[in-house]
Length: 388
Image (cartoon, rainbow, N blue to C red; front, side):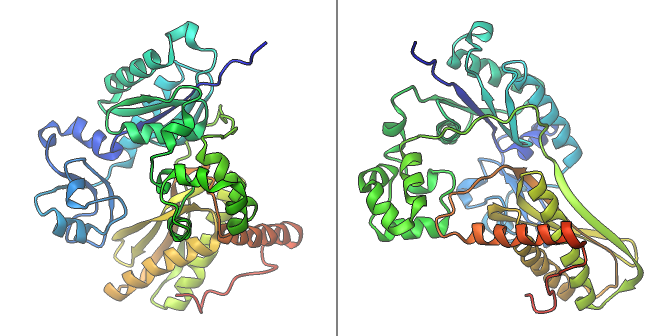
């Protein structure tokens, strides 16, 4: 008997943070809207409306730069409690369509819709119902991709943005992917893209045409995986029954307020190692790293940045957070009462690490985790003073 085709649906909310804010502030609809730090601050853009993006505004950009690019934009301060509540409603809708739902972050998830047609109709019908139900629940539009694998469904939802549906039918995966730029394939970062382009490879179709032998010659065993993924082949299963991850954080209040950057960096390193280890134990990687400071006058600030690829590396987390700390201490000389670091925008985030850098970092982290588990947390520590 022929095995039934898998049907994977990827649902991605459009400009999620902005969408939640527009539901509460309908007077801003149609205007360029930016969620993040105010333009005069040292904050970053968390989300930008589609009206703001043609100006070059994107997530992770400093708010000051976004303000220069789009001076008419309306800036809205983030309200994470509201975003978590909207995400809970979003996930509840998805579980009405399949028992196998895998949240990736607050605003996106996979569903394994295989065998569910008898309940809510064929995949395209289900996709339209999902979009309607989600909008009715939280007043945020969504884009839906449908395919026979997680990879194809995710790329399809990106191609359907904003506010659309795309169904890649069985047998059409390679032809759908072929004309797309190589950066559209999940896991292709800037360095991998540059390396492929040096070989004259700019589209996913050209990846396939290059053949496994050439790709393996340049990228080793990862070349074969790249070839398979460019064809749309991905056997990854949906990991259901797990709530959407919110954030992982650690913070400490000092016995006496600190001005000494060396001692602050040492405390920061300890927290970065802690949150990174917790992320690894949970099988998660983070896209957003946030530094939290509370000064001696009890005023608090947070500074965030987005990293790609998503990470669970203590080295990457510390390097990123230490740069945020250095910039803040340079701008503000007040003594620090509390220091913390948080990882958010968590997902499984597996990357096609063609150059092995992430693999090497994670191997080091795993070795340190093992030593600490066997001999105690103080057996070995990274040095913080020489980091920049």
